[in-house]
Length: 261
Image 1 (cartoon, helix red, strand yellow):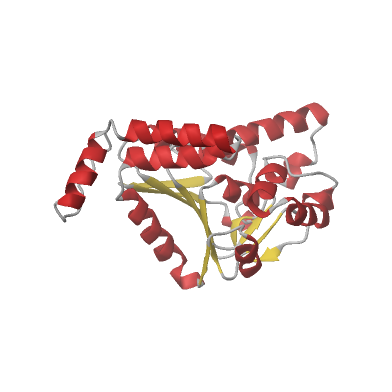
Image 2 (tube, helix red, strand yellow; image 1 turned 135 degrees about the vertical axis):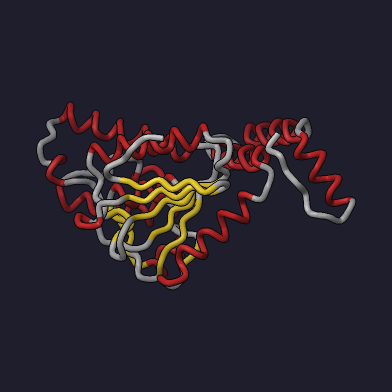
């Protein structure tokens, strides 16, 4: 287990909680924080006891308020490209973890913070949260996948408006356009997220992984290719002990005891 300076990692199988822990700067992302996030998610990917991950920010004001502008201000074109590519690699790790990651958005999710939330598989927001991609106001564009994931989540026109104006939106508006899955009252946020994570963690881990792969990879394919992928993954499920246990438990009218194999 690594020691972290800018994040907190709490492992309580079958769940894990990752908290960005820089509340004095609204959990802004600097190079060190991104390195620690990468390390933490590699640990969680390889920990078979973890079935779902919650990702949030410390304090009451921010999930992640964006990148560290002091660092960005120093970048030339080569450094900027490398910064974006490194950030994209960390978000790709989160998106392709093979386990559901739930963004628990407790406040501002702006710039890189919104991008990290979009790399998560499910987003639950406090009613007081604000989300957006304000990079245009700094003379730059989103660099951690924001222009791509946002358009896939909410459609090209709405994404274009958010990216080009830089204006943040409320949690309720984010729910309306499909940027978040749920909006809850601030005092209910973590309990709601934990309940959802626990519900998913109670399912067969292999079926969860294959379902996530089918949805995510299928969106990058045409319908014919995606259906072939789905049928292949369905077939893989049929080779698992979990499938045998799940179908047997259903017929015997009892809860299944999945083993993840």
